[in-house]
Image (cartoon, rainbow, N blue to C red; front, side, top):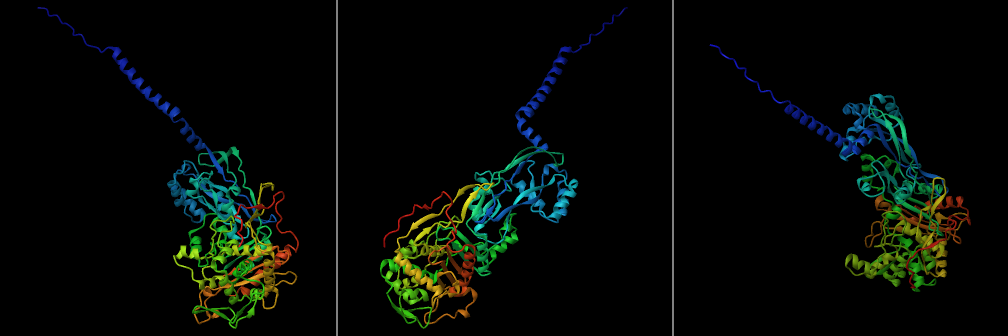
Length: 632
């Protein structure tokens, strides 16, 4: 029997299915690749291109040089010097911890890690350099340069640093700069982290002129951030120069005259209102702020009992003492409650109600009229003048003469002081005014308080015939080549309706305060110049009824403040000065000799009849839109 073998047919997959599956896989992979390429080259093109460029090309911001500050004769007071800073770009560093450790060794310490962390907390853009140490000394600069290969990502950067040439001289007027704060960066103005900005004084008020415009550099770097070449540069525009009305020589003498004592001095040109010298002591060195003040220095300034950051010329509030008697005299003569022949008897005190108001001279001055009362500064005479005027009339004339209100000087945080009135007391204390309180006001005590600048204005108004100028300390703003861009002519705030005959009487008396027998300021006299002035001694602690204070027995902080205000020469005044010495005692001995030194230097610099502060060419005096004085 034969068997037939039938071969089974095998089922082979069709080729088309394999090809189709492989094709789908290839298409999917290509789709992913193309999508990824599209995402990188189209969607993320801009950001990735910038990141790549920043890895090779860096944009370095060039802060502008701040404008220089000059005195009235174009002698520099503030300039800018180069400062070497150590900066690091963390993205260029492989081992950041090791680099930080090595950098701190070369710098001799520092807080590099802390500054890096602070920059990261501030959301620093990638590849932006971080300043880790400022104002390197020469040894630190050499150390970093010679070990550059050991410090990938670290480099030296040269930045402008503000430099105050004379340290504490005119510190409160010039002010200081500091690094921009987060608040500064939130305001428009083109500032960046690390920029310097005016914080105080002139630096703050004239920031828009002094700051200039920043520039930039586009540089190519290698893999560790070292500079290879400059690709493109936009130069910065330096700030404009500011020319002050201050005279450097006079300012130095004024600083020396006040010495180590606390107080203030303001010298002003009575014909223009230009400030010639402005001193506030204790002072500070603005240079400590230029690189960021250290916590130790800031603490020292804050706990200093002398308050060195306070500008006493505009923020110091003091009782004017007997210098206020000038206001009484003007008010009494203008209101005709007082004449040149009016006499009062001074037995050493005046009983008013059940209290005795004493004169500074225990034995009294006898019977006297206005001239001698001003010369010898009789308190009893002016108690009577004040009582006849009343506090409200005294207040009206005090305000008219610029006391108890801001002078308008372009410095921040100026204080107003107080010239009290019956309405003022009702508003402040919800009490009525008592007539006896007027007696204290009449001799510049009680509620009365003024600033040294206001008193300098008062002296200038008596000197120039009753014109109140706005105090100014900037003469002009100049371009880099010295071309004047903006000038500041004198500004008349108000012309006072004071009879010249009355002013002449007061000037004659103030002349004898310095030059006549019995005058309280004979230590201010000059041999060939007729100086006029008025002393003042303002109590810091009140005397007890029935007892006289023994000033020598008081501690320094409880002694009287000494005032002296003056102008010279009598017939053609070129300078007016106000000075206060805190706890210095009598104004005639504490302040008058110092003012004499300033006047002596002034007339050595500017002989009599020599123009001191002529108005800028082509710029007449400006009449401010001030309310017209009322007729009293």
